[in-house]
Image (cartoon, rainbow, N blue to C red):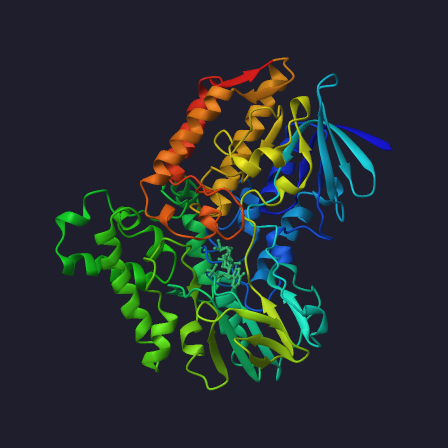
Length: 534
Ligand code: NAP
């Protein structure tokens, strides 16, 4: 075994890992980041599937820490495609010389807390052990793909892909018969992108989706100058809104003071923005009040219905069994209209589940659908998937995997009792990913984690860990807020229901990213009450 001694080890070099590495290194700590991929980018490295693009506007999907970076990076679109976001993250890694502190192609296989030494021993697949005082997980919330397997898969002569493990080299599907399983944000992007170029596209749909029309546009010099002039305002604003975006829903109770026509005007305005404003910028009651939810749901159904020529098909593509906004709202650009094309087909696999593969394709209810390629856009073991597969053992050998198997708990998504000096960015039970623009909340958490580590260092102490009581208090508060929403009644990755056997708990905090940020700031200002620092 070869050992490398560090102050801090960061796991992951995506959106949060790059910034965490930068911050700790700037603070003077010896720090390395390890990344399993051959390059930086995280989600934006792996999800190289056709049509992948961000659905937060680029002017807020960026780092705020460097004026030079803000000055020199040019965005090309309001919602850039995956290669551009990947290039941006590579540019950041180059510009701030982060590559020199990143070990690529390096997968962590275990992380054990050594009480005597006061260090984490983090072992890589290659057998190197990093002995680090602080371990910061930046592994992402949506980074362990959910891969399906079906009977007879080995006999299938075509190719099988998962969107989150897409090959880095171009895959030419033109003129082929392609099947897609999955109609979440990912499947929607794949289907609308491939429909015009493949010979036949068959969508094997289990649950339809309410998707909102994305209003994308090219960013020319004039828009870029306007964006730049607005950066100082935006960089503050995003930290003061419910979802880390530059817009907020109406005040609670306001909807009830409006007529149905006036509420419709608000919805029309949000819809016209062509963004997730239609998700987090309407009325807060949508997520808690079934009557208000139905009103907004019917508005969205109308918007979708007019895009689909065949009324029978519209029935199948428009959800009936759940309300709008209770699962992650995807943005689309031609998704429903793709089904008007004669080469695009819909197979309802809820009514008739997939039997398995044949040599030539997929078999559903005894009927064979010939395919040259099958794309699984089947999502992720979200929130806990990656960290609970990393062999993390804290004080007295306490296993994070075992803990989270029964009870997914953290303190503010930032630390876990029993795991001293383990810090999480993007951990479960914080707003990130599900209810916050990732860039906003990742930066807020990285800043908090950095300050917390420096507080331990500067106060001459060695460890920081939440108390059991503080953790219980947070979990209870998290659940109370979650249980007030209609989301808990719905099966989705938000509630862990997409993974068999997973505990049903809302994976992200839904009390508001701004509320969460204020609480984190307060904890820091008060010297970290509820955390033992020894
Ligand atoms: P997802 O929302 O979990 O969707 C997975 C899809 O696969 C669903 O349609 C699901 O059907 C289907 N599926 C799963 N297991 C299945 C099974 N055993 N049999 C048949 N169908 C099955 O995953 P995702 O689309 O990858 O999106 C995950 C999240 O990533 C999004 O919610 C979003 O937060 C993020 N994302 C963001 C962007 C963006 O910024 N533009 C793009 C893509 C993804 P059921 O619904 O019936 O389970």
